[in-house]
Image (cartoon, rainbow, N blue to C red):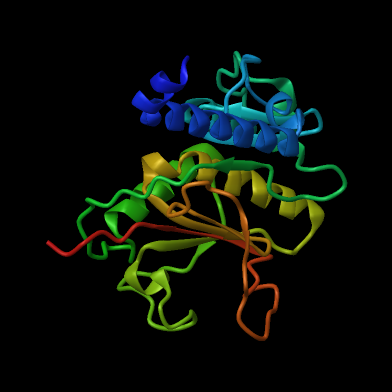
Length: 255
């Protein structure tokens, strides 16, 4: 290109320079992230993906799952824990099922994350006969089908008016506590099996929050990562949700 041509096309030259600078910035970012950013994140069928709906941390790295795969995997683990033949797990990495069943090595804890998808067009609901809203009743029924008989609390006919924080969703009939007492490693592991199942099924069941074992998951978080739960004082095992899983459903808007 001659000097005259350069003068006639300054915008084209500027775009070329900006494009090269952008490519250089992207390359630098990928170098900082390292090869593990891509190699450690894969779908159950082995294909690479950048933003899977759900991710399970395994000993071999992160495994990405579609939401459907996450639901099948957590349901299979829930049934297996009850000694019932598991659901279809074809195409799901065995390392995923093992981690969801056994938890992280030497310590029960979160292994599955799913992106949050809080629905904004739901209508507000009133308490039913058991003291739960219809959405919460649907949740209770789904848990019963997957986990059988459970030790439940946090609701009562006519509703509850005390025993929880000032803004607790228990008072609205939108929350259920599932108890795993006493606090032992085995009960923590069982609690995490339920917590993972709730996260995987959150979109279908309009789940808003899951709290357990000093951690919480929120449907309002696009990344869906587990965060540290800041328990109120005196910070005992109840307030820290060490002995029970708390789950609540979205409230919806008044008609």
